[in-house]
Structures are given as structure tokens and as C-alpha cells.
Amino acid sequence: MLNPTLTITIFTILAASHANKTVDEQGFIGHLTTSFINIVGLLTKVSHKYPNPKGCLKEDNEFDFIIVGSGPSGSVLANRLSEEECWQILLLEAGNEACPITEVPLLCGTLEFSKYNWGYKSEKMDGFCTGCIDGRMQLPHGKALGGSSVINYMIYMRGNKLDYDRWEAMGNPGWSYKDIFPYFLTAEDANITGYKDAGYHKKGGYLGVSDVTYRSRAAYAYVEAAQEAGHRFVDYNGRGQVGVSYVQTTTKGGKRVSAESAFLRPIRNRTNLFIRTGSQVTKVLIEPGSNKAYGVEFVRNGKKYKAVARKEVIVSAGGFNSPQLLMLSGIGPKNHLQEVGIPVIKDLPVGETLYDHPVFAGIIFTVNESIVLDLKSTILDPDSYVEYLQRGSGPLTVIGGVEALTFINTNISDDSDPRLPDVELIFIGGSLSVDHGVILRRLLNIPRATYDVMWKPLEGKQTFQVFPMLFHPKSKGYMKLRSSNPFDPPKFYLNYFSDPEHIDIENMIAGIREIQRIVEFPAMQKFGATIVDTPIPGCEHYAFDSDAYWECGLRTLIGSLYHQVGTCKMGPREDKEAVVDSRLRVHGIKNLRVADTSIIPLPVTAHTVEPAYVVGERGADLIKQDWGVL
Ligand SMILES: Cc1cc2nc3c(=O)[nH]c(=O)nc-3n(C[C@H](O)[C@H](O)[C@H](O)COP(=O)(O)OP(=O)(O)OC[C@H]3O[C@@H](n4cnc5c(N)ncnc54)[C@H](O)[C@@H]3O)c2cc1C
Ligand SMILES: *[C@@H]1O[C@H](CO)[C@@H](O)[C@H](O)[C@H]1NC(C)=O
Ligand SMILES: *[C@@H]1O[C@H](CO)[C@@H](O)[C@H](O)[C@H]1NC(C)=O
Ligand SMILES: *[C@@H]1O[C@H](CO)[C@@H](O)[C@H](O)[C@H]1NC(C)=O
Ligand SMILES: *[C@@H]1O[C@H](CO)[C@@H](O)[C@H](O)[C@H]1NC(C)=O
Ligand SMILES: *[C@@H]1O[C@H](CO)[C@@H](O)[C@H](O)[C@H]1NC(C)=O
Image 1 (cartoon, protein in one colour):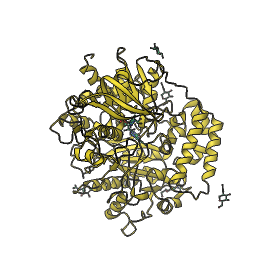
Image 2 (tube, rainbow, N blue to C red):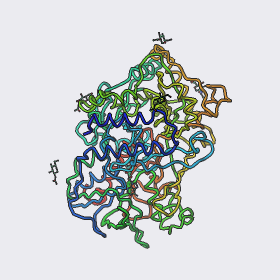
Image 3 (tube, rainbow, N blue to C red):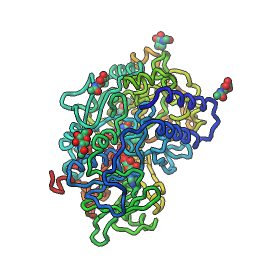
Image 4 (cartoon, helix red, strand yellow):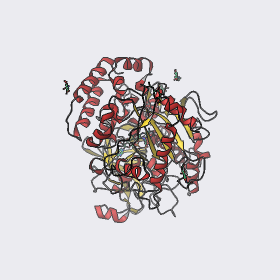
């Protein structure tokens, strides 16, 4: 465990070194955070070693199943498949085991600047993120044992019943809500109080799910105001999703629960599970002619290895890297593969569908009492560490500032079903000004100059923000390889706000209007909640608060909430966008499946970690059925 004195010392040095910075935009914080995490990593014992029961790695090792990637989906698969004692499983992960500092919920934002992130950015395009640094958006993806669940914000959300029913209706039997619901319960170890719906939660599974017990007074006031505005108080993982709620998280005892700590750590002594970290798969090996996958090539410590799969290769490398690996292996759009010089094995629309959840951080409120989270004092105050370490409670357990969620159904989208929210309002018990522009603004690639206009004058003041997030964007992006080099980052073209009907923009504006309406109710007005009317740089020529102003603001400062889906879309052969079938088998290739968020066919009414876990659970059952053990 972390030594409190040491942690405080390091944070104090960090804070002091930021005091009067005039530093290079891109590099400084990255280096600082990386070295901080490295120092803490060195000084803290990682007690959960993964033993290697078979000695050194040899070339041409043979296994029954090879799983590529240890994110939520891959870790569940490794766990469930290795329940079969006679199956030998190899789990290959490009990243390494994460150090315990990653378990402190409040610090999650800083992890984006650590070695546990692949560090991708979107390609510059017209019409969105025009005011971001270089016109590009940060697209973090986890690179660690446990995948993105090691760096994510820990929001636990299953999604809407209608999401899964739609997947099934699109030609994917076995994915209806009725089919999927049992997986939520199998995995869950719930400790939530006050509002859980009977029959919707369970104790005793691998995945810890908890409330955050520490809440700012602003969060209580906001949740009350939302109810005054007519939003029902709900368990959004229960009977219905529309309403307002405090956040449910993948944490336990105040600490992050990752795919590694939940699904791998408890089974690390299984002798039939081989876990290799620092091992990046560069190619799936496919027999020409028969189109049968039989193994993988991977690189570990600069050395190339080959591993053979007697039964199947399962690609669980996440929404960006699974499509990348398929394309590197010759499975993808024919023209594109030829363009980058990769021999085509199977022409499939890999990477041609990319949905994501846009999020907007340009709405700020002030209040007239000390009711918001005080991030700076929390980080510098020894007591918060003592409370955290001794009791797993206190402000360090707040997940990066996110405290409450409202699920609304605007009248803009064509989702007429009242059970299906189209916008989420994410309440943050503070604003980007809390850290003086050191870290939070960089998550959204907001330039220092923009920060200085909008947030700097608010430093030291009582502020909070509510971020609207669009659940079901109509705009569709795509991704491509940069080159045939597996170590080159792919290119991501998000196409936000490109739908010709203009629905995505209007839907977001409807979300902004609802935030403004909620804040007008007495529970928030008691604290004089007032919108900050400093125009977003670049939008000064519009009347503040007009629809045209917000459209400009959205296009200028939009960010991603890291929920990319659809890049290896699941669907029947007739579906021109489909890459895998409903049993997750790659169309036209034998013994090769994809199982992770990339198969999700539509933007989901959730943050995607829980959907990723259930894709792993469902995938494991499908594999067991197909090999006759279930
Ligand atoms: C910063 C951030 C915050 C988020 N916050 C939330 C949140 O609060 N709530 C929520 O529900 N969701 C959140 N998400 C999304 C959620 O974490 C992901 O959707 C989920 O982890 C996806 O799981 P996965 O199994 O599909 O893939 P991933 O978690 O992406 O895991 C894929 C793994 O495969 C490895 N890999 C990739 N390529 C290779 C290769 N070639 N060889 C070997 N290994 C490889 C990667 O290193 C990685 O470990 C967040 C994501 C990020 C990045
Ligand atoms: C920062 O600047 C202030 C005044 O501008 C000065 O008093 C202070 O000592 C400086 N701090 C550091 C760490 O340089
Ligand atoms: C459940 O959470 C409460 C705090 O809300 C805590 O006191 C209790 O110890 C937790 N129980 C378990 C089993 O973790
Ligand atoms: C692994 O450890 C658990 C206890 O953590 C024990 O019950 C189990 O028998 C062990 N299995 C093997 C294969 O050693
Ligand atoms: C949608 O709601 C807004 C405000 O609530 C209202 O002004 C607008 O007329 C409504 N539009 C439709 C098409 O009902
Ligand atoms: C905050 O503002 C509200 C509404 O204007 C007012 O009623 C309240 O007295 C103010 N509180 C303080 C501490 O100024």
C-alpha cells in the first residue's frame, strides 16, 4: 500500500513545481505524471505477481486459445475459459501491470498522461474541436493489464434494455436484454445503498460495484434541484434509466476495481492460464486458402515470438486496436489494405463504422457558498490520505469529480420511446479551474489561451460544471491504418456533428437547455447558482446563450467520452457494415473471433465498461457452447 507521507511529499513537490509554470503545452505534464507514476510504482510493492507455471517463453508455444488484450472483455474471457481445466489459455497484453496509485479514484484524470495510455489523438477535421489544440481530440485508450479499466473514470452503467433488444433486432440472436441480463448479475458484487431496485443487483460476483460515500454539498443540491425539475430519482441500473441519480462505480472499499483486480488477480494461480504482459501482437496468423486462423505473432522486449492456437484466436484488443490488428492481418477494406501494402485475405468493412459519445465542457456555474469539491486541498491535505488509507473513504474516493448523472429524453431525437434517454447530464462537483489548468483542460485538449479566458478568472471561486453527453449520435466516423507498421498509431476520423439533419447539434443544445432549467430550481438557487457568461473564444460574435452561440461552442470545444464502438460491428452477413456474426466469429475466417466494445453495433445508452464485461461473458459462453462444454 502507499505510504501517506511519501505520497504527500510527492504531491507537494508536484504542486509546487506547477506554481508559476510557463511550460511547453504538450510535453511537461506528460513527463511529470509519467515520472510521478514511475516513482510511485517503484516505491510501492505490486503484491499481485502473476506466476509463470511453465517457465520461460519458448518459440512456437501451443495453446488451445490465445486471447489478445486484457481489457474488461479479454480478462473475463481469460477467467471464464480457464475454468475449463483441460484448456490451455494464453492471454497476451501489450501493457504491463499497473502500480497501485491507479486505484485512487480522484486521480483518474492524471492517468491519461501516464504510460498506461496508448496516447492516440483524432485527425483534424472541419466542424468539430476547431478550438482544440491542433484541432485534435485526445482519444485515450488503456495500455495495461486490465486495459482501459485501469485508467477509466469508473462509472458503472449497464445500458438501456432497448439497446440490447435493438442489437438482436438487427439480426443478432442471443443479444436481447433478456439474454444479457443474467450476465450483469453473475459478475456483480454490489454494495449500493438507498436506491437499488429489488432483483437488479447481486452480491458475491467478481466485479465490485459501489456508491461513492463522499459527496459534495453541491451534488446533493443538484440532485434535489433535478427532482424539483421533475426528474425521478432512479437506480439507473435498475428498472428504468430515465431520471437522476448519484453515480454507481466500479470500486470497492473506496478503491478502483479494474478488470485485472476483479477477473485476473483472484485466479492468477490457475495452472492452465498463461499471462504475458509487455507483449504486443502484431499479426494474427491465417492459413492461406483455408482462411483458418492458427496463431499470432507478437513482440516482447523487442523480440519477435509466435504462438499457436489449437482451437481459436480471440481478439479483445479494444475498440481501436482490434480493428487495427485485423487490418494488419489482412482482414479489412480491400482498397485501404492495398493502399498501405497489406496482402488482402478477406475484404470486410473493418474500421468503417465508428460511433462515439461527444461530451461538452463549456458550461460553467458559480455558487456563493463553499459547497463544491476542493480538489487542491484534498490532494495537499494529509488527512485525506489518512482517511483514504485507513477507511477507504473521503474525498479521494470521488471518481475524478463526477458525482451525479441525469438521463433525459429530449424532444429532438427520433427515439420516441420514453424509456430511452438521448442525453446524459454529467454533474461535476467542481470545474476545470480547480487545478489551475494543469491537467483537466488537457483531457479535452483545451489550449492555455482558451483556459485563461474562460477558467482562469474562476480560480479560487466556487464553481461546478455539468457536461451534456450525446448517447445516440447520428454522425458516424471511421478509422484507418497510418501504415502497415503495427507500431504506428492508426488514424481516427470522428466526423462529429456531421449528420446532414443537424440532429446531433440540436440534441446537445436541448441537453444544455435542460441543465440551465434544472439549475434554476430552488435547491440550486439557494446557493445563487449562476451561469458564467464569458463567451468561448471563437464564439464572441454570437449572442451569449443563443442557439447559434451554443452550436459554435459545441463545434469549438467538443470532446470524446472514450466510448468508441462499431469498428468490428456485429451483424449478419447481409449487413454491409458487419465484421463479425452474432457468435462473434469474423465473417469468412475460421477460428477467429472478436470480443470487445468494437463489436457493439450501435452507440449504447451507457458508458462502455459494463457492456465490455458482458461481451466477454457472452463471448465465453458462445465459445464454450461451440466447443461442446456448455
Ligand atoms: C480515460 C477513459 C475513461 C473512461 N471512463 C469510463 C467510465 O467511467 N465508465 C465506463 O463505463 N467506461 C469508461 N471508459 C470506457 C471503458 O473503459 C472501455 O470501453 C472498456 O475498458 C473497453 O474494454 P475492452 O475490453 O473493449 O478494451 P480495452 O479496455 O481498451 O482493453 C484492450 C486491451 O488490449 C490491449 N491491446 C491492444 N492492442 C494489443 C495488441 N496488439 N497486443 C496485445 N494487447 C493489445 C490494450 O493494451 C488493452 O489493455 C473510459 C475509457 C477511457 C479511456
Ligand atoms: C510564484 O510567483 C509568486 C509571485 O508572482 C512568488 O511570490 C512565488 O514565490 C512564486 N513561487 C514559485 C514556486 O516560484
Ligand atoms: C459497503 O459500503 C459501506 C459504505 O457505504 C461500508 O461501510 C461497508 O463496509 C461496505 N460493505 C462491504 C461488504 O464492502
Ligand atoms: C488457487 O488459490 C485458491 C485460493 O486463493 C485456492 O482455493 C485454489 O485451490 C488454488 N488453485 C490452484 C490451482 O492452486
Ligand atoms: C421541444 O422542446 C422545446 C423546449 O422544451 C420547445 O421549445 C420546442 O418547441 C419543442 N419542439 C418540439 C418539436 O416539440
Ligand atoms: C446566495 O444567493 C442566494 C440567492 O441569491 C441568497 O439567497 C443567499 O443568501 C446567498 N448566500 C450567501 C452566503 O450570500
